[in-house]
Image (cartoon, rainbow, N blue to C red):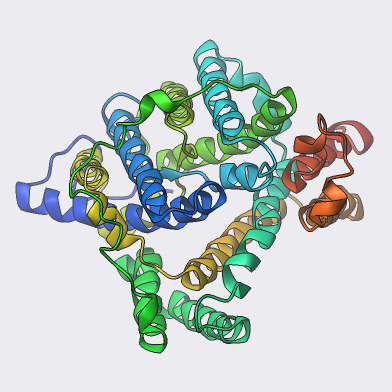
Length: 430
């Protein structure tokens, strides 16, 4: 297969106007994911609108710093960065734990990931990532987020009933899938942002009273790291282990994102780029934990954007990073982009998670014909992960406190089961 021809190569710097336009495109792709995951996670910890906005501010800040560092010092590839869905799973499953414990675990996980990458130990861990394991991890992320998505959709807000929200979601999803089928190029790559904008406008036509802006009485400028020293180290071994398993999945995602862009652009020294990229991702997650926010990861959507624009310049990410950094210092701007209704966020999350399931199925079906044993190895983790994710709170309360972060986390249970089945019970001879 011949190398794809690009208008601007990896180390080319486009003219100023094109550089800004390409940067705005990457910025438009980054913002929706930050807002979606940021709002969902902030809901777990804060009821105050001000605190939720500050939380999202800090995600904008860390994402900007991580993106700029990756492009200039890390993998040095045009890859968009943002909050990790798999860590959202970990936070959602750790609601019984103190927030300091959760974010201390994220900080520890990030530091360990960085050390593993720098020391070269990640090469040995890659042996665990068989197609069956990777497929289960990708699909489990979607399945174990189902309770969180369900709460976003069916929870009545003001005049909006659960039935209306459910009907809205079904119609909205149908329209999204039709658009996803027939749109091409940059329109297809940016379908999430158009869906968020259009869905919000339509929802506000039905319920204009929900469009509340400017009532937080916040100042127009504030530093996202102003409350840095509120961090308090709190270590619960079970929670740490739970998040380390989440970081195992995060590292798969990060590795896949870097490799997919590498295969498209074919740069030199890919192994060094992977090592540096994973190291920076680990350090960025350490900073995220220190600031008390969900960690970040390199996203896998970048190849489609690069191919559709014929621009592979890593320097186009710099204006995007600076834009994210600027937004992080203006809470009013963050508050405005955080107006998106919960039901719209839930609907878009379903669409995104369907893409996650699709990616998992592609991994499972890519290497070889699926046999009955493969179905068993993947089927049991799925079933156990779903069952545990939907366990009622009073049932989880009967679990030993020390084991609750592990046994009460459907994603962790599913990953542990697939690793045991794949590498012990049904271990392949090849």
